[in-house]
Image (cartoon, rainbow, N blue to C red; front, side, top):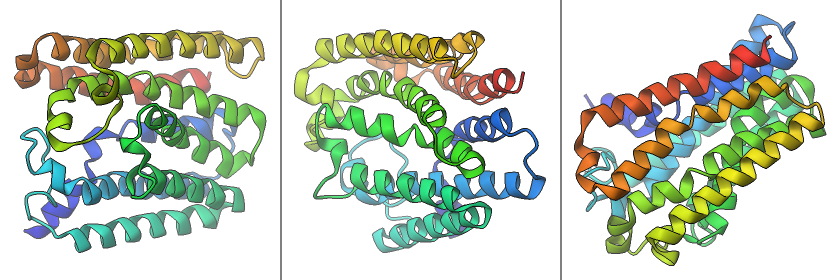
Length: 281
């Protein structure tokens, strides 16, 4: 059935734990939210974030043809470019409508997510292929799971924005490792990622620098009383991902070991559960 290919195009296994971050943003700072509003926010966010990955598959279908690790339905002709584009529009549009039913600020935060998605993936801007700018873009894009949930019920304020940036930084610090892992394939495809631009060793060093910056930023949020110091455990949930990328870079055959997939799934579970646990305390 072709429906299966449209479901695969969403690639929910790559991002489902961000639903937990969005839920934590809602419940952690507004525990009295109505069940109806909470449901609309979570479902709306899920549709919107699914559109991030369908748009990625739409515009990466040419390069993904030659990457054996990428199971892109568009690249392999299971669904067409136009069908994937329409799927993206429908997902994003549905998500915006659902968030708009909750609050104007929810709708606006959803629009911000969509704009960042377009800027990151779509030419001529396509910051995904612009070294250094791609890190900034991925940081902002992955700040949106918390930003959408928080702003939908609390509006826009410095606290919510500051915490959202923390979640973005946690993804940004992993990004150079990820591009280093895919360095050879990206060079073959002509993708000018950060690793393709500055090389393997510098990418790893950059990622470590970003880890330090993220931890310092976390300390700033604690000092400003935006978050509880116990949330320090949340960055620990990203250690499995960092370990996976370090191992893969040093041993390319490690990509094929099934245990690494289990590690990343565990990391996803922790990434969704830990913020909920601490923000609801």
